[in-house]
Length: 331
Image (cartoon, rainbow, N blue to C red; front, side, top):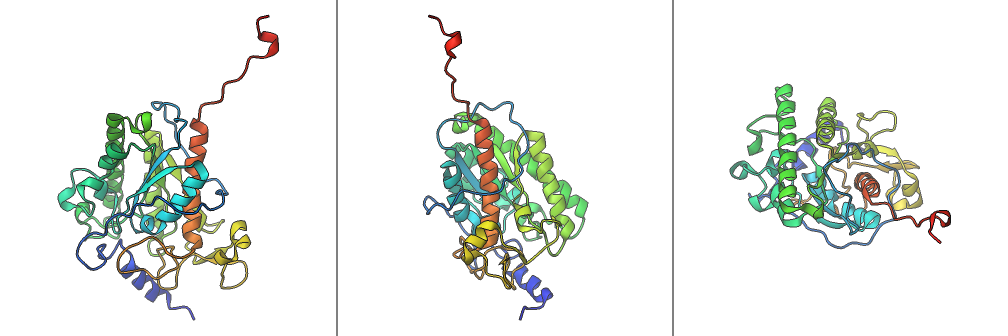
C-alpha cells in the first residue's frame, strides 16, 4: 500500500540534497563523480526541443564533442546514464562534476567562501581546464535558506525576489562560462554552448518550476544557447506541469520490461513512494552517488538531453564537399 502523500513529501525533502545536508552526514560537500566508461544504450529516441543560434561560433569540429555536465542531486543520480547516452549518440568525450544540494550560484566564481562547490570545480574553472564544446546545466532551482550563496533567498517566500535573483545568477553564470571559453579557445570553436535542462513538475509548488524553466528559456534565447526539455519526458503528455508518479511506458520501455514495471500493465514508475522529487528508484544513500538501478525517469531525461546535443552537433557539422558535375567540368 502506498504511503500517504504528505509523508512521502516530507521524506523526499529530507532525502533531497537540495533541502538537506549535501555532505552525506560528514559535514563536507559530496565530491564530484567523473564518468569515463559504460556500455552504450540504444540510440536516443524522441527529440528534445532546442533553441537559439550561435552567430559567433565556428562550425563544430570534426572530432567528438567534449561535454561537461554540472548540476545538483538530479545530475548526481543521472550522470552515468547521460554519459552512456552522449557517447552512443555523438561519441562524446564526457566529464560530469555534480554536487548535491547546489544551485546556480554555487558554480559561480567569486562565491568560494559561501559555496558548496570548491574553486577548482567552478564552471568557469572547468571550462578553462577542459575546453568543452557543450556545458549542460541541470538545476532544480534550489534556494533553501541553508544554501550560503543564495543569501537566504528561498523560493517559498518573496517569490518574485527568488526569480529575480535566479535569473541574475543564470545570466552571470552564462557570462562566466562564455568568457572562460573565449579565453581558452574551448573546443577550438570559441565559447561552449550552454544547454539548459528544463525541469519536471514540482509536486509541492507547481508554479515554481514553470518560472524556473522560463528563466532558462529566456537566458538561452538571449545568449544563443540551447534548451533540452527533459522535464517533458517525465510529465503527462497532456499536462506538462502536472506531477505524476507513473506514466505510460514508452516504446523502448515496453521492449525492455525491466523499465516497464508498473504497478499495472504498461506503466512505468518514475518516483519511489517515499521520494517525489528524485527519479532514481533506489533508496537515497547517505553519500550521494549515481543511480545504481535501472530507472525510467533517469533514462528519459538523459535521452532528452543527449538528443538536444546530438541535434545541435548535426546542425553545426560542416556539409561534406560536393564533387563538380560532369557538365561543369573542363575537358
